[in-house]
View (tube, rainbow, N blue to C red):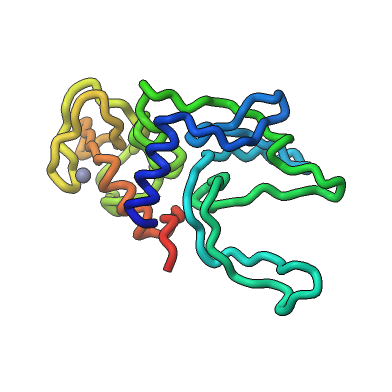
Length: 205
Ligand SMILES: [Zn+2]
C-alpha cells in the first residue's frame, strides 16, 4: 500500500468518513468502524472498515463482453478480516452482506487506532506455545501467559526494556528448584510467530 493511501485511510478515519452504507440497525458505517457479520452457518466475523486500494481483484465483466472476468484495481471501502480485504457479497435476493452487518464499535477520534489499543497484532492465544527459546528439560512446571507488565522488564530475547503497561509473554517455572521467570517483548514474539508461519503477515508477494 502506498503512503498516500495509508494517509487517506487515516484521514478518512479522523474525519469520520461515511461510507454511504448502513448496517442492519440503520447505523451509518464509517471508515475506521468495526462491524460484525453472522454468516448463514453461524460463523461470526468481525471486520475493520478500511479505505484502500486493492489490486488484482477479479470481477465479472459486463454481459456480452469478453473475457468474462478481468483483474482490476479497486479503490474504495473494504471490509478487512484477518489480513484479507473483502468486498461485501450479495445473496440470491440481491441483499448485501453490509445490510446484515452490525456496527460493533465506532472509530473514536480521541482513542488510539484499534491496532494500537493493546499493541497486539494477533489473537492472544497465538502468542503462547511458540517455544521461542526451545525446550529445556531443566525448566520444569513451566507455564506461559500474556501479561500486562506492572513494572519494566527486560526482554529475554532482544534485551530491550518492556515498559510497564505494555504486554509481554511471561514464562514461569522452576530450574534446579529455583523459581524463574522470563519476559519476551511482543515485537520479538510476533517476529518469531511470523517466522514460524503461525500467523498470516498480510504481505502480498
Ligand atoms: Zn524483544
